[in-house]
Length: 350
Ligand SMILES: Cc1cc2nc3c(=O)[nH]c(=O)nc-3n(C[C@H](O)[C@H](O)[C@H](O)COP(=O)(O)O)c2cc1C
Image 1 (cartoon, rainbow, N blue to C red):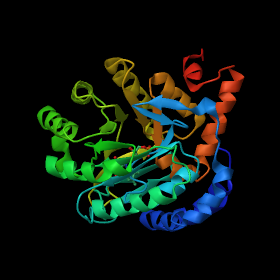
Image 2: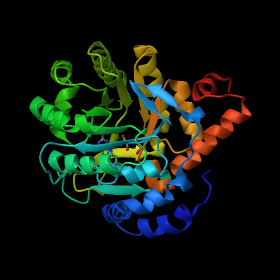
Image 3: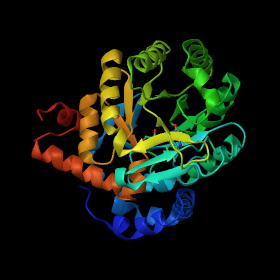
């Protein structure tokens, strides 16, 4: 059970009284007050060498990252880093501005600590994201924390353009071929288009590359995702993010369906991470994403074979101190078990 905080007792009820996109808008307005979060950073940061992780060609001061979709236009990534996260994934960025799907397109399931969204990549486009990242780079207070850009497109050329625009401004790029809300990108879940996409990206890339895969629940889906993962490894991809939201029916949304996120995903995330890890072997990074809320969730993900974790719905339900709570929890677990690194904790007897 998560402890009651100012956020869960006071701020969350106010935000949750608003429709989800209005609440997100209010949170974004606050997070754009960069100086405020810079001043508050010491309150949220838990800097400890025992939390460090090296994965996918990057050094992370902590393995807890913000997943793609919270800051689609890279407008307040610095504030998210000041909340204590070890890294952030901005985006998903697409090449030209897009309105996304018709509203309503997010609904909350508070009893399950979950959301369903069918946003469909609303985006100000890559030029806006680029400008925001350029500004961020000038005033970044923690340059040791990796910034990753999630990019997508409906064609290989669109992916290439976005990748080329974002890569110089970030430490790594994550290719999103897994949104359940944008029909066209599912093309890249087919082996041949996916291989072509990776070959073309490899022709231009200079930095680590991650791929975010869709979730699966049956042997057919498992075969499809594991094929993508093998192709990614063969193409020298540095890490896979497992996984995106789970497609579900959603009568409350204009589209009638969307992607489920939050608490109900955790067990599936752990199962998929373990399966992907046993396919991949130890070398490639795996970023576990889906239903991570607490330190014990992170430990379970690390035990399943994850190198880092990413969360989004946990930030909305637990609030700005979620990273601090997870970090303190991980350090407590390490002390209880006499471990001096996350690696040692993950391999210690339960
Ligand atoms: C409102 C919302 C928007 C999202 N937008 C994106 C996105 O643009 N790109 C992406 O790769 N994933 C996106 N996701 C999926 C998350 O990155 C993540 O994979 C998923 O929510 C599971 O993690 P969680 O349970 O911690 O939220 C979005 C999720 C939500 C709830």
